[in-house]
Image (tube, rainbow, N blue to C red; front, top):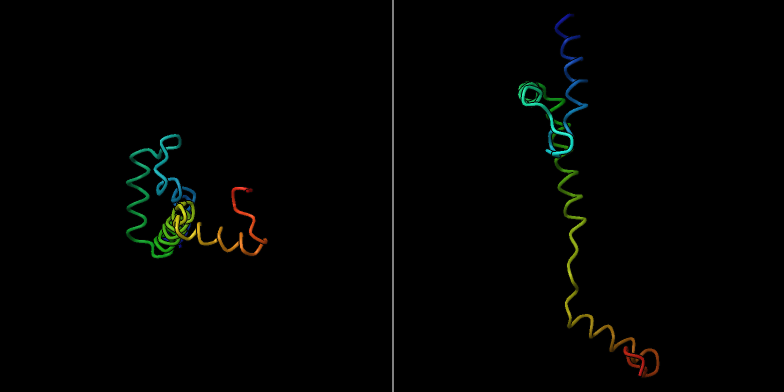
Length: 95
C-alpha cells in the first residue's frame, strides 16, 4: 500500500512537470535533479509515459499548425483572373 501511495504521489509530481520538461523553456527550467527524477519515473510508469507521448504529439501538431507557407504565385494569379472575370472585367489592381 505504501508503494502504491508513493507511486501515486510521484505520478502527481511528474504530471506537474512533464510539459516544462518537454518545453525546455529557459525562463522556467527544471533543476537537473528534477530532470533525473522525472526521467527515472517515466522509465517505469506507463501512465506518465503515455501522458508524455500525448503531450509530444500535441506539441508537434501545434508547431506544424503555426507554420505558414506562402501560396503559389500562379495559383494566386489564377484566382485573381477568375475573380476579374466574375466581377465583369475589373482587374485585381482596380483598373
